[in-house]
Length: 265
Image (cartoon, rainbow, N blue to C red):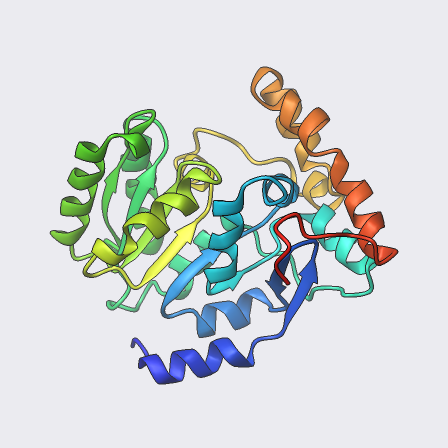
């Protein structure tokens, strides 16, 4: 059952949040999140997010509004431990979605729509998830065109599709910060959606079109290396150039010298 707005606000206020660079993340376990999350937006920061948050003011402002912010990276988890503010658990988007639909497999009040991935992939993910759950928990899927976020006609088509759907959970997997920006631009127009999950490549993982790194590499915080080897042309600049200054920023925060580039506490 969905909880009332007053109860939901009380849950949000009670959560413990910890600072890393210019955002706050929830110190929460996956089980606690599954039990609490009945309304709102979940975003899951990794190193790439945190570096984009030093340059992209709109993305930064979205983080200030998000209802749940969970650490998506073992590297970020280790950085927070180094800062003296350890989080209970890493909760990745790709790990949370299967936990979410399994937790709600017998809950008819949870009905999911998948938005993202290449043409046809979201439909495959819908079929596979429904087979795992044993019911049609995913009630719709759509793979938008490249650059759809700049096409108001297609965005309106998606809004109409969602408003005519029984879905009240929207999974958006089109990459950050595009997915987060799209959610916050259009969420007021979505009449039935109560829960938003901004979770990157998760739809591809569910469709089994892209494989995650072996568990041992995830635990050793080198999943990024696995992905770089798999997609060097697309990811080399992100991992080797754009994300490396993260470690210097963490050292600055440890020494009390980090400054929010947007000068907002």
